[in-house]
Structure formats: C-alpha cells, structure tokens
Image 1: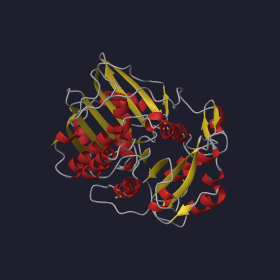
Image 2: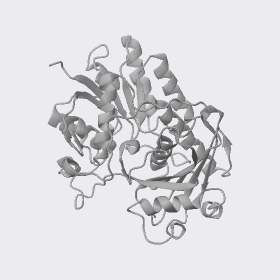
Image 3: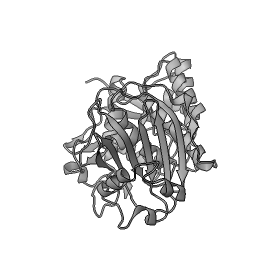
Image 4: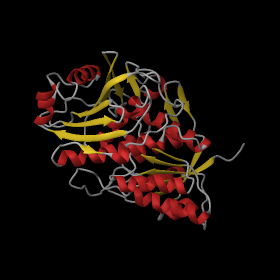
Length: 403
C-alpha cells in the first residue's frame, strides 16, 4: 500500500474541548459517523503549538501517538529538515490566551501562521493543500492578504467551520436556484467566535438561492433594545420565532425577556436579498444551539443546526460533528479539491468584521464594496450527515482525553 499522506498541524493551543483536541483525535482514532467509524486515510506527521497552558493536552497527544512536536512552524513543515516534507497543512488558530480588541474579537495569529507556512512553500518551490479552521482573520486586510497569497503560490486553500456539516432537524436544504426572499440564522454565545458560526449557517444556505451568490452591498450591526424595537419592521421576527421553535434548547418564555442584550447582523446582498443573524446568547441565553429559517414563496421554512454536545450523561460521544468536518478536510488533503468555496469563508470573515464595527459604533449601515464579488457554488460536500440527530456509532464513548 502507498504510504499515507503526511499532514503538519499548526495550532494555537491544545486543551480540553479545544478545536485542536476535538478535530485532531478523529484523525488518529477514527471518524465516528452515523454509519460507523471511518479509519483515517492520512497521517498527522508533525505539530507546532503556539501556547501550552495548565490544561495542556498537546504534549500527551504527541507522546501517545508518536507525533513529533516541533518548536517552530518551519520545522513542523520540514520535519526538521531543509525543505517542505509534508503533503498538507492544517492550521487551527482557535482558543488560547490572546487579547481581545474593542470589538470583542480575539486577536488570533492566523495571518502570522499563514505567513510562516507560505514562507516554507516559497522557499521549497512547491505548495500543498492548506486548511484553516474557522474564519481567516479578525480583520479584512489580513484575511484578503491570506487569500491573495494562497493564489500567488497556487496553494489549494480551504477554510470554514463544522456548522455546514452538522445535523439538521428537520432536514432542510434549499435546492439550487430556490427563490429565497429573506433568511435569518439564530445563534448564541461569544459574539466573535459564535457569530462567525451563525454567519456560516446563513451563507451556506443563502448561496443556493436563485442566481447564486451575487455579493454583499452593505452590512449593519445593532444590539440591545434597538434590536427589539426594530423587530417585525426591519427584520423578520416571525422567521426568528419559527427557528427558535425548532431549536431543542430554546428556553420557555419570549426571546426579549430572556435576552435583553441581543445582537443583530443585517446584510443587504447586491441582488436585494436580505439576510440576518440574530445572536440570543446574552443573559439567560434563550437558545443553546443554532438554527436557520427563510421565506420561500411567502412561507417560512426552518430547521435546527444540531451540534452534538459534550454532556456524556446524555450523549456518550461528544462533538461528533467534528468527524464529518474532519472527513471533509481529509478529502481535501487527499484530492487537492476544495470541498467548500474558500470565498464563502472570506466573505463571512468580512461581514463579521464590518458588523462588529457597526455594532460598536453608531449601529448604522456600512457599505461593503470589498464584499461585492460573487463566487461559484461547488458540488455537494461528500461527507456530512443527512439525518436529524447523531445515532449509532457516534454515541459510543470517545475519547478518554475529553472527559
């Protein structure tokens, strides 16, 4: 048999429940999915971690699975040699002790990681598939630089999050070319990290609308009582209520009472489609999961985007949506073909930054000429669940380090 492709991991930190833990363990222990466990087809060959905290799992992971842990990104990619020695790179720039700016954005060093990786590519005279977990950067200038640099060096480049490949309850996916009038995603939690997830929920559905993704004309972020004052006038309250009715973790009572300080992202697309993200995580947290709804033909369609939680008293196998996420990344590493358009992540990165700047400023519209470019929808993602809830092998105990 051919030797498996070697993957270098560049991460911020590896601690309990961090993305490095829940994403990397399937790459060494197997991907737990509804139909059973899929064994990895690639090999984690090296790691670089930027930080080690009190709950560090990186050193133990390295020792348990015999994966060298290098002190620099360059050495992780060259396996301690003089030139690129791996077949793919996975950048996980999430979690860790990094400062926040005034817009509640964590200043993760994702561009720095990408610069180091591309430096090795340039010196070695070749590039390999590179994946970045979640959004590209906290600011547009760095995100666009990363996208452009990958183009310059012919880097097969993919990014994004697990939300587009999690379970949906009930199953809902718009057919290509659906005439969507307006759409809204509901989210919760920290506004930067989880706001991006909610934007990916919205975008992975809206890009399937009639005419495809045409680009974004302007963005606004509002918060607090202004959101509730605008409800039903400037954003579709009935869609939000339908989505919350779908979400299994929705608390009793109305959303305004449970969430006095919500955040709303409003997005005007260049084809006049309107999109919204309603974050209901403040105070009592009206919801603890994500959802989506849209008005199609005058009627509201809605679904929950279900993420398997880590409460092992109820689910004996946490975060198995990361297995589907990981399988899509693995497929990309094996084939060099992106499974989702990186332009989706670039666009949501730009929307998030703009919305947060508006939210912390005068809460007015901000024109987005840099987000007006359309992008092409790729063929259907191969690895993702088609049902409503995790079942079967995904419920088995996995793995001990998560306890």
